[in-house]
Every structure is written in structure tokens, then in C-alpha cells.
Image (cartoon, rainbow, N blue to C red; front, side):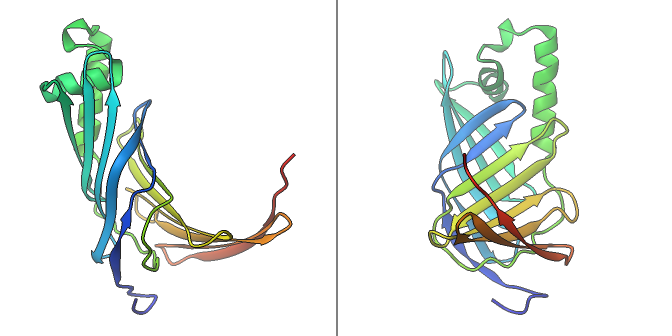
Length: 202
């Protein structure tokens, strides 16, 4: 709600499906929510679980999307560095090579340093449920959050935010039929654009 120059967002998305990428390791979120309480910076509470050869690893992503916190745990219980070793390499710290230990330290540093001070400037109307959600951490420690929602069979809304200034954007796609789609997009830098696209599957 509110004017386009200063929108006020309140509401919660319930996770339908989502993915988390840490370095080359891709995980699936099993549960979570994305909430807005007035600020345009969403608050994350997401959980991903995966099974390695010797442990079940749980990763919780929480906090503001511009500065998320990653928490690792496992069953059976292991120290956090052991959990990270199991997650990335599928083996114990004692069985890692010097190169793998260096990569593990780099991954830990990246996870400790993700986030930034910029905020989302997308005006997305309240909706319940997220159809797509991605949280990606790249090799340089940058993080990005993308969420998409089908408003109906023909209309799809996407919001996206990275940790660099001006990286936020919102888009809406309307399928008008016969392979023709209309797309409108606005960025947190105040830019807006639209287009008509034609898609055909063979």
C-alpha cells in the first residue's frame, strides 16, 4: 500500500518450493516463510535438509534478505565445521585434503560475510504462497533472493534482490494466449520497462 515512491508492505509468503545454492551444492528448501512487516526488506525463515553418507544436515536461513544468517546443524550432532564439511564434500574434516580444507574455509568466510545494506524497492501486493524461491550464494560471497508467484493461470509476478545497489527488481508476466506474453518490469533504481514476447515450443 501507499504511494509508489514510498510503498508499505505487510504480509507473509508461505514457501511452496525453493532452492539454496552454496558454492556448487544445490539444496531444496523443505519449509519456510518470507514476511514483510512494513519495510520493503523481506524477512526470511527458511529450512533446507539434505542427507550425506553419515549425517542428516539442516540449514536454516533467517533474518533480513539483505543480511541473511546461515545456521548449520546435523543428526547426529556435529560441530558446525564438520557439518559444513559433510554438506560440501560428504566426508569428515579429518578426511579432507589441504585444498578441500582451504575451500571449506573460503565457504565459511563467504557465508559469514553475505548481505549488504541495500533494500528492496518493489511494490508487490499481498499474496499467500510462493510458487518459486531461490537463495543463491556465488563464489565471491554475493547473495541473491528471487521469489515468484502465480496470481492466476496467466499472470506471474517475480521479485528479485541481490546484495549490490540497484540489483532489486519486480516483474509481472501476462500470458495473453497463442504464445504471446506481455512483461512489465521496475527496478529499485526507479527504472521501468515493458515488452511483448512470443514463445513457441517445438
